[in-house]
Length: 341
Ligand code: P6P
Image (tube, rainbow, N blue to C red; front, side, top):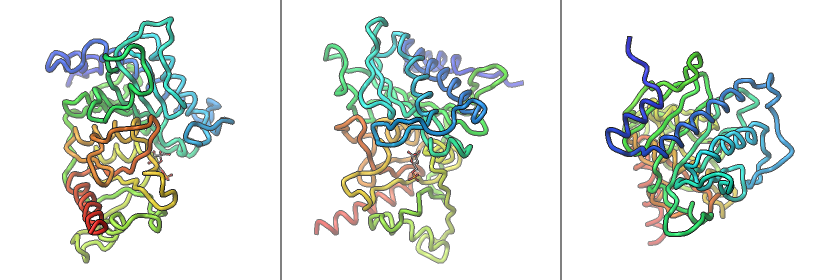
């Protein structure tokens, strides 16, 4: 029987191989994994746990919070604040950063998360998840401030998500490929189920919310029209469409079998670059996708090179199978050149 490799053993062995996971980062990742187990438990209770439905509050995004949004946020804060590995945290569900209280030791890492992504799916029993990103606190400034979080995605030292679906699966990168861990509920631990994940460079599957088609910019319309023309059209092949409206679930499918995911800018709110958030949705997912051989842009440039200016800033997202993302990005650049001419 093949020996089960726990998350803890994987992290220790990775540290031995390439030193990418110093003890404090290993502690951080194990604490986040334990918090995801608790969130999975709360999610799985559903109606029996009195955790469905909305709270009477809104988050900084102006979205009505689900009870589980708040529960998941509290679980991550309480699990991580005392360990001494963090200086501060930032969350989709909190306006400002959460500085580790003085009663606990401060660490060198910054943790950012969307505690429960896809929460519109909670009440209809569709997969949702937690997305997290880890940065190092700049050591040139005393204390910690929001400005310390404003680092490009290429500065991440770890990124991942936990998808709460038929299985609870933790997906992680520290810059040396992507590994998946499935929660073994009998043991109560995450067990390595796949590593060195690779995304096919081509695909026949796209993920986008088609109801927004009339609002899209021309390059996106051009790309999707070509997909819809199928094998009789320019692409010479038929495409399939998926849209779970839960980024974690859509990205997990792409990491598992390829595809392209798009949440582009649209004309509904021209001043908004996109719906998804750069720091704790697009950046961690983009690093995972790149580490698995895919590509990720905002339609014009590499996602991980974008320099954030605000903690909760939004961005247009195109990620997945490399050749498809490059095609969509090329269409955007073509359009920009024609506009400039
Ligand atoms: P729409 C979930 O609310 C989320 O932030 C992402 O997880 C998901 O991809 C997107 O929004 C869905 O947006 O407009 O299709 O409901």
